[in-house]
Structures are given as structure tokens and as C-alpha cells.
Image (cartoon, rainbow, N blue to C red; front, side, top):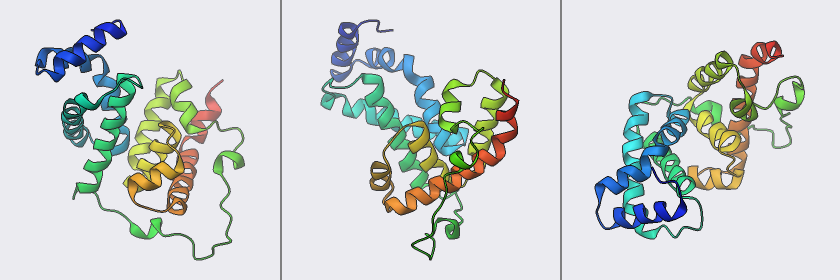
Length: 202
């Protein structure tokens, strides 16, 4: 396991030269992080495993272009998230309820943020990182799995991965309005499902 930037650089150099053991040592400490990020988007273990393999292949192929301007783990994690999004788009096993994704017919309609209408409920993205109660964390993962895929991926990217609305829209090929509406519906659903659990947290 690399413990210093110099050791990590050596592993990257060796992996680029074709050393599979070096590549394994480079990514092994981060596999759990990669898998969890992918699973939050796909909510299916087999799909997550397939997307992880695609992501690892993309990381390997992209290593010669890695310039070290960001941490390796951050760079590789972003690749894995993109692999999850690509897998989601190409999968035929997901059935979308397209009507839920259409924007409102009233362009002046205001959509209140459910995080503001439920002040006692912490933002779900912060909750994921801060909660010490395993029961609530498990409930959040269960709730994410219940969301339509289009809403789940937007929620994960915006409120957990902290992508900008514009970046999400570009990545998904939709407008920023669609991103905001999907995010609103996802937050609303998650808050409604998790409110009793938040209220029980001391």
C-alpha cells in the first residue's frame, strides 16, 4: 500500500509500464471507496461490480494521462462515477417513469426546497457523512435504492459528490432545469422517508 506520494508515483510509473502488480497495489486501498460510490448510483450489486470493472479499466488506460494535479484517489474516483453513469445509461434493465422527469408546464412555479420546509431534518448529504447510527445510514441506502434512477443519480452527484448543477446537466445531457427538478423530487422523497429517523437522533 502506498504511504507517500513518492511511493504512489513509483506505482503509477510501474503500472504505466505494464506492471499489473503495481496497478493492483495502487488501486487496492481505494476499491471500497470506488464500489460504494458506484453502488449509490446504480443500487444494484451486480451492476455496481460490472461498472467497477469498467472503471478500473478506464483508470488503467488513463494512467499515462494522469498528471498529478489532483490526488490519484480523487481522479480515479471520478472515473468510476462516470463509469457508473455510462452503465446506467446503457442498461436496459432500468424502466424510467418519464413523466416524472418533465418540467412543470408553469415556468413561474416555485418549488420550495424540502430541506427548508423541514428545518429539523439535516441535509441528507451531510447526514450520510456525519451519522453515527448504522440503522439510519442503512435506511438512507435503502431509500436511495427506491428512487427512480434518474433522480438517484442527480441526488448522489449533487448532494453527496458535490458536483455543480451545470456539470451534472452536461454529464447527463439534460438541462439545468431538469437537474433541479429531479433533485427537488429526490430530496423531497428522502426527507419524507427519513424524517422519523432524524427526529430520533439525539
